Length: 215
Image 1 (cartoon, rainbow, N blue to C red):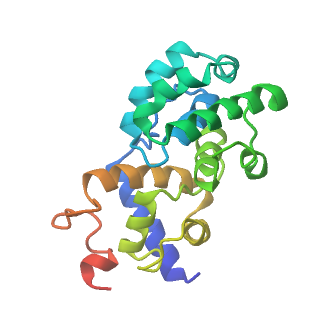
Image 2 (image 1 turned 90 degrees about the vertical axis):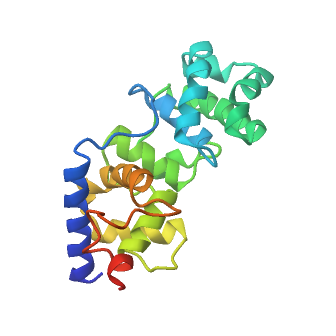
């Protein structure tokens, strides 16, 4: 990767750190790794806000991974119904909790290889877990990350493939900054660089953004 891209990435990181000093995960998992595992799966094609609401009831009824692993599947489906894809998601989170308890002693593994064993967990959720729980270098290529990276010029404008975006960003963003940058992309994407009608006027990145300056 060119030095120009690395400089652009570093400046993007610096400015977003100033705007959002605290890079907080939007999913309210109370610092409990197993909860983030469950919430990460539920977040597919669903807003974080809705997942947070649904999981208050879910975790109240099933407060441990053991409890959720042994939960009634129809009851779990009923609770998570608002998250969409409720049948496959309920099956995945129940199986994941069973795997976590029976094969990992309730301790979330800290490698990509192991995390990908959990039903419904792909690289995006695995990276979320690695970055948030274990503070490892990890790029979470959600829709905000993919959209904003392309607009700024960190990735090719037409690049939508999450794995390729992850690979590019992992090469130009400092390892210790990657996970937090993705959280800041979410905040920035909701408030300013929105999918529709982005607020380019007055945007704090407008002078370095390829889309804004016609690059």
